[in-house]
Length: 318
Ligand code: ATP
Image (cartoon, rainbow, N blue to C red; front, side, top):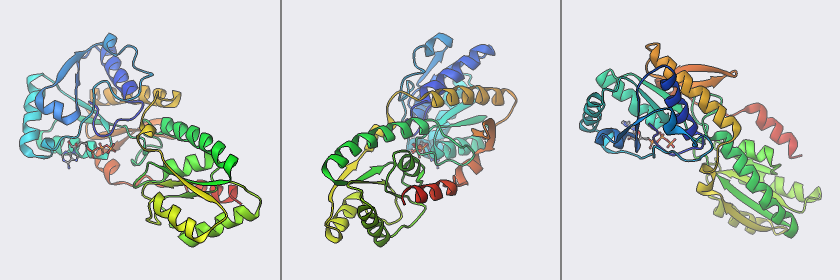
């Protein structure tokens, strides 16, 4: 099942789970539309051939949904009844922390074995150095910033580019360093408006004719990219300021090789762990090895921002 926001690599994870089941001669059913489909019994048997041609596709062939009904005891009871009717013995959920919270509650109520695979572009989940879709999103964003820079440098413009990341600045920090941004604003660090304008003035004095500032949705200064533009317009007259909000295009597209490989590894580990009798874990990548983190820790723990990268970014913008 895929649940919550879609992410590139979810299809590759579905393929891996289905093929691992085929390898071990286990019957496998796909649950459509997340927990809502589970409640409604929207299941389809899947074999190795039913997942052909999807490894390179973005989105999720099983569709995703947000289900308010699953948040109620009655909804979860219906979901349990559907699974029992279909003779399902274990569940692999590809999703984010909300989906894992649902899985954990479901297990606590019915003792149903569950295993999580982290699928979200934000990389904001504890217990893995990379979530599915994160690497693809980084490459998509860097590609777009490169294109915007062409315009910025042709017109001596300053661009504020908003990227996804309400609670975590991983996308902003990594793409900012990767695309050579002059400043990076993230939720984990308060740069302050004055420091921002000072830094932009310094860039200008050092001979830069254009500037790119990458801003995470939830940046600590607490201003939207449009408010940032207004502030800089008012306090600095050296640049023409423009704003670009990248939005949902960051979620789409064909998964990178890294995400396809990660999804393949995670799917195998998830099925093998259920076969080993394990439950309530999330599969993750730690020190390039597959690792299991208890779901409650994955939900509550914080994925920390890379402080070494923050320092690198500071040095690169001098
Ligand atoms: P993303 O990171 O993309 O937002 P997510 O998995 O965190 O993904 P959510 O919308 O938070 O996405 O959760 C997905 C679904 O999980 C919800 O629609 C709901 O059905 C279920 N869910 C979330 N929290 C709970 C909860 N506390 N109890 C029961 N079910 C829940």
